[in-house]
Image (cartoon, rainbow, N blue to C red; front, top):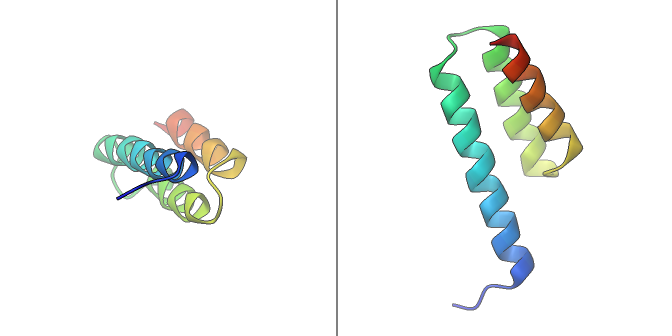
Amino acid sequence: MDFAEGDMLHISQHLWSDSVADLLAHNTSQTDAGLVINSARRNQSLMFGIAAVDDMADAIQMI
């Protein structure tokens, strides 16, 4: 299967952000930080960029 460079970047961004969100989720319970992580996952599916990164930064600050 032949992936374009952009496809690989897109896949790696999803894997990275899911891994970070999973790691953060293990350090939180059903808190506001957990809700922010879910919001970040929704945002990344629309556009991996400023919105998702900002939500992740907010989640990290809450921990």
